[in-house]
Image (tube, rainbow, N blue to C red; front, side, top):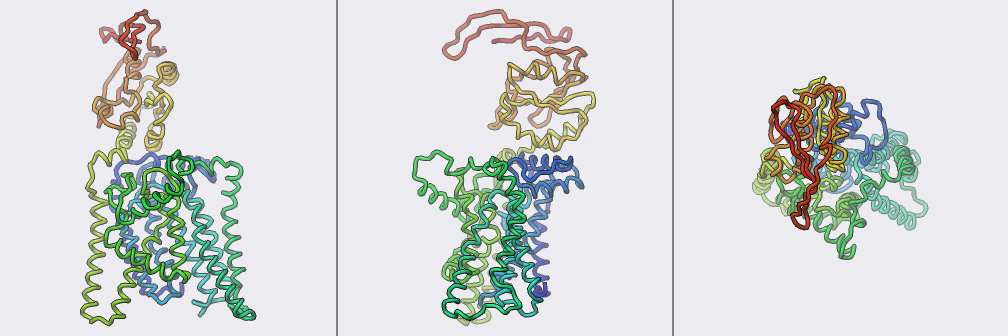
Length: 599
């Protein structure tokens, strides 16, 4: 850290404070609810705490889940315990990005510290990055470990090529940087599926290095690039590659023995979709749609983009275009080539998918390099002013205008994230907080003598929707899912209720059936309440926000049935509906309702 000055420390401290505010402020209540994918990570974390250690969790890479397990062990089963991991990771990404960008451009004629400050500030106030730093999604780890890997790689490379050789302590510490780079790159493959494209970002860099050395050998065949006290580039990259393989080997072995895990998400690829147009045209359209996220088009998924805005504002977009132009013009220089290749490689995971684009999450690997380009644009504009030798007052005015723009950009991010102009119903559909409320009610009404009954569709299509309850419910009464299938529901209910004194049912209400996502709550016919009303005693109904908790007292000897036998009837209502049988009788409660079943 010898090249980190007091100015750097002060800059990083300020940037971390800004980033921490945006990532931790009201984290316990924003975003609302807990999405099923977040809850799934929590459930896997509970498996870890129970001793279920593995390298791959179905379709999920493991590092985030293990971090969540540590958080849950300290904070308990809550949405905050999952999301605080992402907030910490997102905040740590800021200082690592600062070090990376400063190291990346230290060999150029541009102001490396200014570019690092601007990039890190943009990232700290990035609406795009803030959103994923407050969600329990594993993708937020990818920018952090990618930045750490590339910082270590460039630190070692700059010492090896003599840029920072003054004060270097020799062969071993230099190779350590390459080893750390390889270890970190290997760890990225344990974070999020698009990380598999990250090694592609290194290919142009490595090709540029090899080509440069080849040209030097042709021009000066007897020269040496580095003193004998330093390792050769071949040795350094061998250490990097071996370190990478050492970390990746366990996961790679796992994929070889279980190839289905590796291809678990291949169903979203454009190559597996039936398309009417040639694949090249489709990929071109996808690329344009994905690039449009940088200032023109919003992600259609409300979870990824609550305010429905592009990843960049117009101010950022302007300097982004300038920075890309600068990088393309100077692409023969390794730092600019590296930035362009990183950005391009990590756009591929989104471009190669066929769901609605743009997709903020699948492009998360382009963070933070996406913000390097607007930083380059600002630095280039400032250099131009100095080259033109404009007056001090004009430069001061421009600097003040830029500072004001950055402040407004931060305020705009605050408004768009914490007070988005979006209908509440869209946020409810995106995060579905009712499951959190349902789990809370279940915890409050818990009765060790009873059993919780939750309706599930005949094929269990909406089982993931109940992951939130599985994670947050901590009562003593077991909770069971009953498939609402007329052929099996009575038998399932009989088995579940055996030995229990009470049944507590999560039941949808009339107002819920009017909502577009009501099919997640499977028993729209009311089959389970019908069976319980028929065979047991209804004690009370507790209503909350579209769901009722129905409480029943169960008899000791209980066997459910829809109807023992049907009286044959023949009534034809047309091509789609025919009445073939009827059954009826009295309920189990004296003086209570009668029941009728029509088939």
